[in-house]
Length: 121
Length: 129
Image (cartoon, rainbow over all chains, first blue to last red; front, top):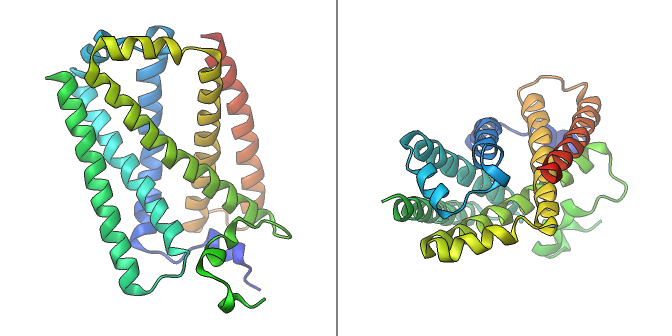
């Protein structure tokens, strides 16, 4: 008999599920890089303002941090989407939620890009 | 149980009720709880980083505060969330593509043991530095 847990651990493949898995795997690497670079290389685990600016001005660091931001935002909002869909929404309502979360995601990444630019320019 | 008569909110909260459920349901709830916590942290983190726009006068005193033992403890909570969510997610991904489906309970226990070891190791690292 298929229990609830069986269905959850073997979900029907959907683009959301694949994207969640791929971004999740990417996050293992990106989060590790983010943590080691931000907190284990820096003295006392954190940088003062001058050190943050100098660090973020390295183009490779900027690129990795922005890739991390896009990946983590995608993964987080796909997770929120899955939780919201558990309310048992109608198809049009699910579409509206997806569009709204796209909006949140674009705003989140836009904010991150703006913040990074403000700091390093 | 009359699920159809339940309110939407009650149905949506249904997953959080782990009473009488198996190990798989615990794994699922654990992933959701850590996931929600990590989303909340992500946005707190992004808002806090806006202090960088205030320059050294805004940022540097804050750095002193977050080096306190209280914040280091919160860092360990955060790292615990990553380890539990990440290892659980890896298990979900593996079983989702058909790997280790029969061994998923053992995999869950093994991964969570790994998470526990990782949490202790990271706590030692955080408080030693």
